[in-house]
Image 1 (cartoon, rainbow, N blue to C red):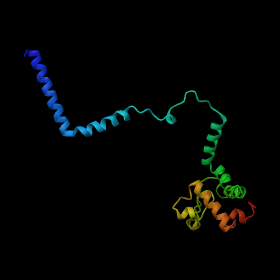
Image 2 (image 1 turned 180 degrees about the vertical axis):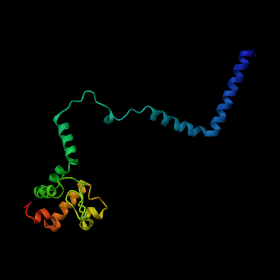
Image 3 (image 1 turned 45 degrees about the vertical axis):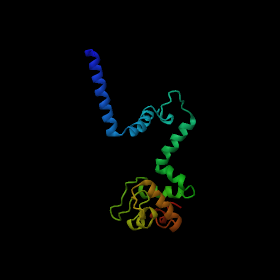
Image 4 (image 1 turned 30 degrees about the vertical axis):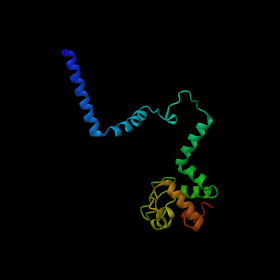
Length: 165
């Protein structure tokens, strides 16, 4: 056998034995089953919903959707969306109690949040029972709506004083 052919045969023999050893160590059937999955996964295109559409146009529906999303975070708009029947009076009460500042806290009574809940009153609301904070504006508004519907308006000093009737 010529030296080049000898080296090729030797290399081929080494490669075959290495390949056989590899197949025995990882199990050839397992490799053949996993290879198509790995190949397919590496060539899957990204989902079209996540792709940027360079030809998209800004239309009124997009603007309306964004405005609605922004309003959902605005406590004032949230109040009017959640309880339109109580919103005017609760708007007046919140304006009188906290000036629509969710971080307000009365140092003497410890009343807190937009609707100035006393700690004992807050603890009795569904939001207080869930462990939510009276300083969270939406939770405070939800609790104020619940309180107005279940206990009435007498809970708030500004109403008792006749400012929000």
